[in-house]
Amino acid sequence: MKRHDEAHAQSEDISDDVMKEVVSAVRKRVRKVDHSYDIPYIAGCSKDGRTVYIDRHLPRSFRSWLSRVTVAPFLATHEIVEKALIDRLGLHYLHGHQIALRTERAAVEAAGISWTTYEGFMKKHEKAIDEEKLKRVPRDLDLTPYRDLEDFEKLQNMVGAERRPKQAANGGKRKRK
Image (cartoon, rainbow, N blue to C red):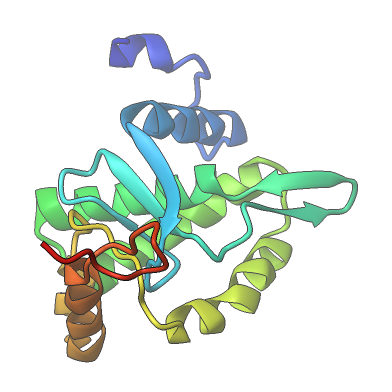
């Protein structure tokens, strides 16, 4: 799909309709949203930016008033915006994260969801995810955020988790050769 074909809402002002199109356009550029790994900081991106990883312990949705809110579109938007700012413009993670967080908030609010409710859901799960023992980490997870924050303990744990042999179907015992 061409970029021109994705933009239907016409506004140069702040617009919920345009923001909804942004979320849709970003999602089309992500090959996969994967919920099967342990991801510090709740979510992250693959090195090539085509896969967004969301921690396997984060519920995929929450109830807000009378509707169920799926969080993946908003987290994917955050991660792709953040990755583009870091990789293309060379921004430090903290600066890219701040812009991505504000974009995520605008996307949440454009969808008619209370930011306070959404953020409360994320904060509720943030500490447990941050403190979890990393068992499964994708080999292609972009480690730039952890390097920029000099979170060397987290980096060491992630590298150790991605190098551990996968659990075998025989109770985790490795077969002898």
